[in-house]
Each structure stands twice: as structure tokens, then as C-alpha cells.
Length: 398
Image (cartoon, rainbow, N blue to C red):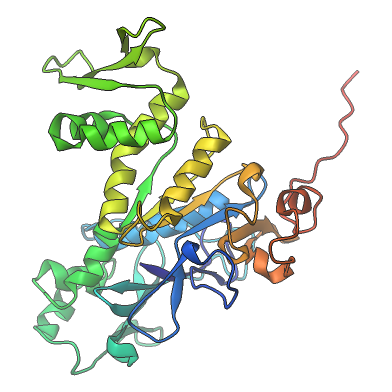
């Protein structure tokens, strides 16, 4: 479960930005949030939508989440570069490190983990745990510029071969990742949250292979139920695995019913792009809902009807469909779902750029629109909340 994410000096983000999934005190749409047992009166949101014009930094926000995950979970050889690009339009910060910090919950324990780094090295790294809401600093790694070395601090709360892990941590590697590779069972849940719980699904180039493979196994009925709930008139799915290297991995056929009540077989390639995309979504979304993971999707509205976007969002809000409180974070241009019938005000975020061309994030709740009464779509498109493209008149060349 994601609580909060902070990013500074990465791609189009210059100053520190904070994105939170913490529920506000508002009582609107209670099913869109859930309580957790780690702290009293502490609730998280099940979804968040990020709006903004093209090139404002919406995708960079998800790239920041993905970059943090990648650095935690990927082992680099000595001398290899970290996948980090600082904000390049400010000469005062372009040579400063990028900073990420994530707060999340694993097995009813809250963790706060972060690091700062350049493409060449890790500078700082820290991890706090909050069992029963009580803070524990497990380790801290601080770069000392004068000596050109790290200063390490460990507490008795962290058990294991800390000296070995420290000595094995390269300049371009995280202590967390190194310790887990060297069998730290205590740190493994933190590492696994990044590697298994924080997940990304691409809308462009999304393959149908995982859903096809899921159908060959024991997942076909769940996929059919998923498609029928979204009003696709598909009665059955036939999937066959191809062993020929020149053929697609799977041969997929869908079954429809004609006006005479007879079954008609369709090659999957003849289905609409929206149907193909929705089918490809089925396996990852069904598993994410089953496992209680965190799903990040960029431009969820691409090739999907607004009603289908609404359907996917409501899956995460529905306690029956989402019994383990999976979370959905997505960017979109689809304003038809920008309504208080679907979202709480604290679930809606905007991304925009300032006069220095740096991206910044802010929630709709900053504007305090009237609960349940204000037309959010109209307010957004009229410019009340910002984060709209500035469109000027165009005079053609003679």
C-alpha cells in the first residue's frame, strides 16, 4: 500500500514534489478509501487520477516512480550508470543529485525509504520502520563531500551481517538491494514491495500474451467475467499456444453469438483495438486486484471508451472486486470521469509547469470545491484549477 512519494530534481521536476494517497478528513465517497491497522484514524485512497496538458510532466511523474523501483531492483556492475536525469533548465541544480523517497505499508508495518543519487553514484540512503506506529531508524548512509566517503549509521533494530553488507555495497548500488542479495530476511519485505507490489502497465504496446497464458491456465472464466462485466459481447475465448518461431506466441479466437443464436468464431486480430487493449489489461488487473498491489498506468484513456475507463476505476473502488485494497494511480486526459460521483476531491491531482518550465503537482482539494455540487469537468476545462494547455491563435504561412 502506497502512502506517499516524494521526488526532487528528476527530468522535468526541479523542486521537491510530494504526492500522497492519504485520505483527507472529508466524508465523501467512503468506499473510495480504506482504513489500515498500523496507526489510528489513518486511511488511504484506492485510486488517484493525474490531469494536465501535454508535456507538463504527468508521464515524468510515473517515470520517477518507475526509476526508483528500477534502481532498487536492478543490479548494476561497477562503473555502470544509474538511470537518472536531473532537471536541466536550472544551472544551480543541474549538478545536484536526484532524490526519491517512498512511504508504504508491508504486513501492517509502515516504512519510509529513500535515497539521493546521480548517474554515477548513490549519495544518501535511509530507512525508517514504524512497527505499531513507533519510529525506528534502521540505517542511514550520508555522503561526506570533504572526505569523499560515506558515513554509515546503524541501529540495533536492524539485525544481520551489517558489516559485510556495508563492505559489499558499491558506489552505484543501494545498501538495501545489496543486503537483500546477501540474504537479509529483515529487509526483504521492503525490497519485495518495490519488486512485486509496485507495478506498471503500459497502455501502448501492451501485449495480450499474459492474458492469453492466463486463459490457458485456470483464469479463463475470470477473464470472461471481466470482459462481460465491461459489456463486451464475447461468449467464449479459445487460446492455443504456437510453437513456431515465425508465428505469434498465442493464437486467440473469440466467440460471439449471431442473430440466430449460433456461435461465430472471430480471429482476435479482427477485434477492435479497444477490445484487444482491454483483453490485454485483464490478466494484470485481475492479479493486481487479487494481490492488493499498486498499479501505475500512463494515459489510461488511450484507445479506451470513457465508460471503460470508468469501469476500471470503479473496480478498484468496489470492496467486492478489490477485497485487498489494491491501489490505482493513472494519468489521463479523459475529463468525462472528472466528477464527484466517481472521485473524492483528494483523489484528483493536477500537473503543470511554472515559468521556469519545471513541473509541479497539486491536488484538487487545494481549491476546496463544494462537496458534491461543483461541476469538476467544467471547472477544469474553464481553467479554474490550472493545468490546461495554453492554446494561442495560429496564423498560417502565406
